[in-house]
Amino acid sequence: MTHLRGAELAQRGVAPDCVQTIELVRDVLARVGDKWTLLTITVLASGPLRFTALHEQVAGISQRMLSQTLRALTRDGLVTRTAYPEVPPRVEYALTPLGRSLGEAVDGLVHWVRSHQGDIVRNRDDFDQTPAAKTTASPHA
Image 1 (tube, one colour):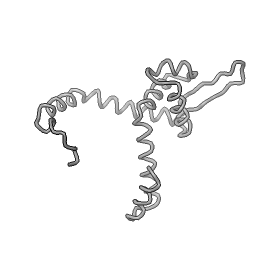
Image 2 (cartoon, rainbow, N blue to C red):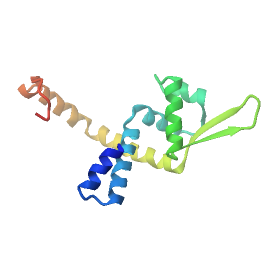
Image 3 (tube, rainbow, N blue to C red):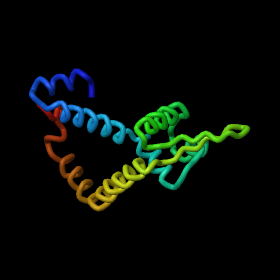
Image 4 (cartoon, helix red, strand yellow):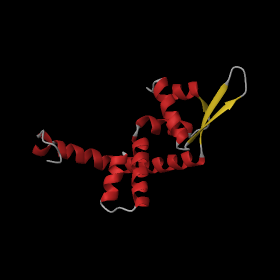
């Protein structure tokens, strides 16, 4: 969340520690909501991998995007980067306990989707058949 939004919350009387929590929750949700983060965490759940092996297993990700994703996950303490003093250099990425706990939370969400996918698909199909689905107006209008 931007500093401006935090300032707006503070002006509305939200306690500073709550503002910090809200900002962090939004930031973490943005990170977790990114498809590359979820795919990277899912692949690393099986164990440490070198960059090339990880790149091969995360379908569709560019090397640049994988590098950015790993950097962000390392910054948040979800992934470790271990460089071994070898020639040629060897670097491995692995989930931290914090990263594994996020993986478990994501697994819970995936389980929920699997358990309810029939309902979700049916609801979407029902909605798509209504006149409301055919309007171009904003859902917030």
